[in-house]
Image 1 (cartoon, helix red, strand yellow):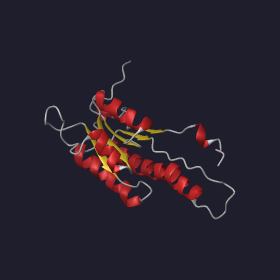
Image 2: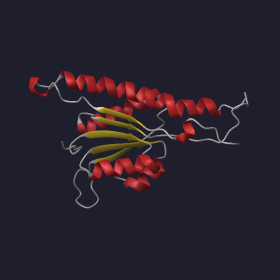
Image 3: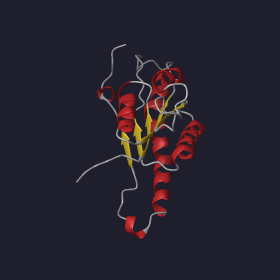
Length: 169
């Protein structure tokens, strides 16, 4: 059994650096259409270029594009999906790799860091997963009878040991 993502469309969050960037690049190298999303627009431009719609070498349409925005905002999540659908008409893979770490005192009742981290590391991925899963289901409704056994898509949520350990601060 062979596994190929060539021709599939993926959204990868946290794509401006680290694991998200590595996944976005790898998927693109394997022939997937990739929408890399992150809050850090300057870093996205530094990694993907100022005009990601065009391949730097050929001047043709690129299979790697970016979307800058704060995924804690529901409208931004909807716009990310819309931008992906405008570019490639579908989404097959979602990788939630966007994570934020803040050194804070979890016992400080006046510190809003825990709320911010929960919004960034949990709720934004959940909301995006819900939106993308609904889109994948709708895409499956349009399949021919011969393709009914085909997977509708994949949603991958990344975490780290930081999710279960506190850092001194």
